[in-house]
Image 1: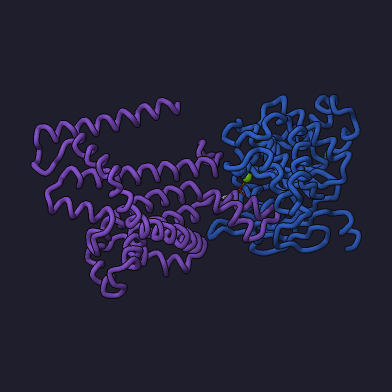
Image 2: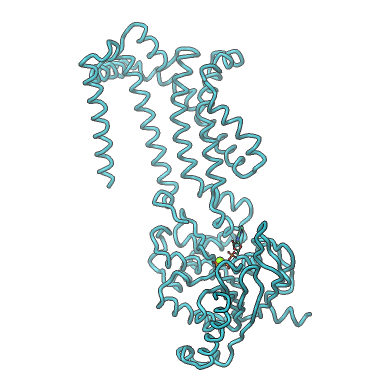
Length: 256
Length: 252
Ligand SMILES: Nc1ncnc2c1ncn2[C@@H]1O[C@H](COP(=O)(O)OP(=O)(O)OP(=O)(O)O)[C@@H](O)[C@H]1O
Ligand SMILES: [Mg+2]
């Protein structure tokens, strides 16, 4: 038990979630090892966002429990930061205020939070847009604002709901590499939702395949051998390609 | 862009005043003076200072009533928008207030509060408050839930969510309600002066109608409309300054 607390940053135990008559999650259990990146891969509408929001403490589970660092959670906490699928920016606030908003709510003073925000705005490539408003940005740029906001609060667990879905392919690849470096260099735990099999295999330590609604984990795949290779050669690695193929075969059975 | 909308405003003004002048000249009605006659009467009133004395009287219940309606109305509106229970309890009162024939209520108000300032303030409030309350509560209720959720996930308290998310998000619609409320308040102020005791601008209107001094009557009516328009424009400017991002298009 105490070993489990050290190993897993987040543990989801037998979680059920019903929205009225709609059964989104049924008896879902999954462990998220500390310092690793876990992807959730599954068909649209299967309950990935729902699971993330339950872990975030934004939604109550109908049954079951979620442990973060061994403690059950039922509300948001400083140990988790969320990147929203629909960005959830404040349209009345500038980019820098949006990015610094998490710190603002934590009571960090203005000059300090703006200097932190400026750094993350730079990291996501939005330097020069600090004082623009969200409606003046493209979809992909808005998404990066949401990403910078989550990174700037420096939480040990990051819940990322399709964080790269709206950015262009070049930026996406750069972000995937940045993410790999983050996982390697900072001892953070990432829970990452994506629809791209390649992306999941490329960035993850473990990929959880979810069944269509009502959702459970059907399979956990841990790509390992190419993790220590040079970032640029992963995409040519034979295990990488095999894993992509294997996941595609599993998922294809739901489509058919 | 700004100069173009300014130009259009001037054009629409010119069209209306032109039509008025024309209607006055051909004599649509014996009681309708021309635009220029009315303007001359207005200038005369301004020079004699009559109009300023009148507004000193008219503005008092108007300003007091509008301020009360704005503060209490927005307060109640936010409260109603946040709580379903109060929505059920309070909203019907304001819907009835909005629909009630005000002229029929005025005798009751006079009975209860006499013919002084209080009754007039009440009339202004009855006119102005419902639309402010109803707009505010609808706007509060319609705050996008994803932004509220975002604030909660970044550890915002209930107070943070209300002050930093709900109020700014609702503010364009609250301001729209405020503008409607202020226009209604102007109507209420004049109505009070015509129906309760003739003072201020209402006095000019009813006195000049009695003496068949129609240019003065129209001048008084014109001046109150002008004042309302100026006031509404100021309100719009305040809104622009306060909520820069909001006016430039809304994103989800
Ligand atoms: N607030 C809600 N009320 C009712 N049903 C909901 C609600 N939110 C989600 N659902 C339902 O729960 C199911 C799972 O939704 P969820 O958003 O978690 O899916 P998802 O896996 O994130 O999908 P996508 O990949 O398209 O984002 C869906 O069938 C949806 O209809
Ligand atoms: Mg989703």
